[in-house]
Image (cartoon, rainbow, N blue to C red; front, side, top):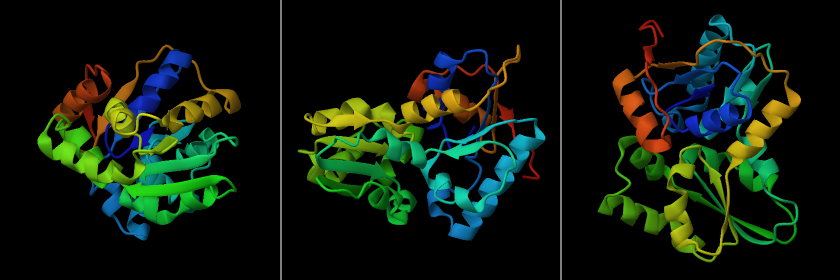
Length: 245
């Protein structure tokens, strides 16, 4: 399972609830430039490199639990069952949904237009908002600060009467309560549930008495702290990715 930071741990948690017997290798690539800031070719190359490392470690299935990385997944070859989060984000929106759907995501995700094009249909008005600062606040643990409240209020201003909100960043479930407060009538749609449902339903996943592994290209201590603070995931040990990467 690959993400730039700890956002993908929401997917990790859901998968472990359904299939606690499946060993997971989680790679957090915080040592790299944030994926949303990389040029298309650079991001494709980085995602390919990180997935290749997971395969070297024996991964038989790959989940890219990052919307930014998922925008370039069509340019990546793995040779094993692989999925990103965007396809399941689109699937998570009910065909019957009418009215205004707010899509919250990072700049790369929103500017790719993948959600807007995939959700274009009669009776549904899609309002996509670049919510870039929110994931940074979540990773840094600053969601209780005045600056976070200002950023959130600005981003959510056009969506206060939305009928639904699609969380197009795996970090955002961590602030679902704050989002609901600013859009009280909105249904919150988290693609992680659809992703895990598909992974468990379509793939024959391995079952083994192996411990989950957590690896980061960034600071292992910071990853442990962020995992506990954001999703309540307690990581006993986080490995440092080899410097050659």
